[in-house]
Length: 106
Image (tube, rainbow, N blue to C red; front, side, top):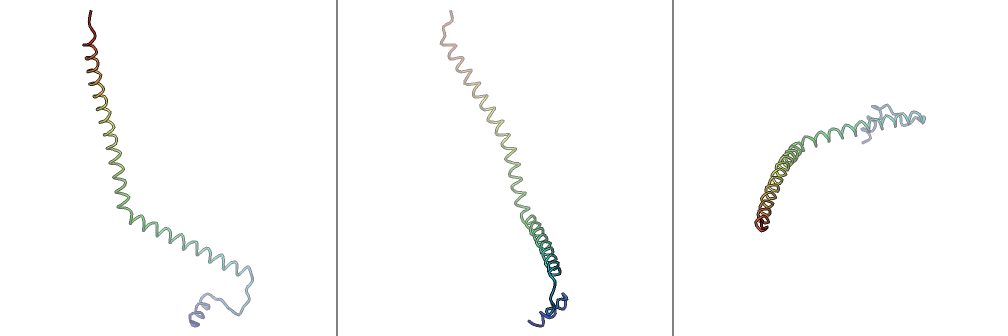
């Protein structure tokens, strides 16, 4: 454990016996925070890419489902409109003829 600590200290150039000024400590902290932000952003982007790849089939399924429903909805609307107009025409004609037959013609 101590061996690893000494290697790390030497690698980073930190002398634990020295007193560092606040500006030096702040500069080190700023560098650490900047590197942490970069690492977090990179991890987020990699996770987003991975999720996009994994969810691609599901996204395609729902997109296809939406397009099919949209197309079928339009077809169904036309179908029901024509059925409604046809029913109204038949019912109106029947009602007109029935009333016409009951009214005596002078």
